[in-house]
Image (cartoon, rainbow, N blue to C red; front, side, top):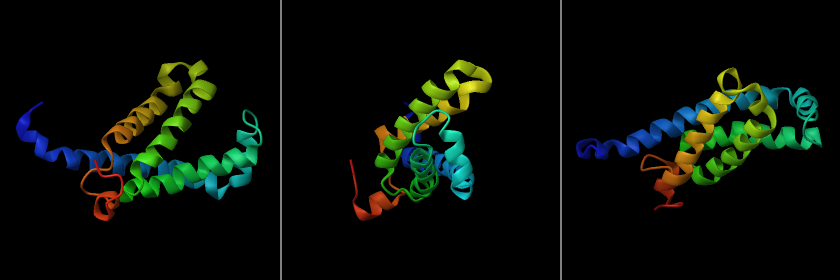
Length: 133
């Protein structure tokens, strides 16, 4: 590790957290906005479709907001890890890496990093003393 850069590790965690949160918000909002359509699409692979549509929509949209704020970061990250493992294995693995699960794998890696690292200094978790390492 380059020691002088270590002082910026909390900034790096915050950047990762905010960017992943924004991506989740952007992907979750259309699902919430068209919950019936999301349920019909989800119902093709997962039963009952409406139940899983609500779970996925809330995990992405509300979870994304929580990540941006740094609130319950490790819990949200754990949920996203499970969700994106399922997305990769059940939906996108047959499509191959490029144009298939490459973006999902990147989201999975970011969620795993936040699960391991926590929310960092610049977060509500730190401010309120939640899950401080």
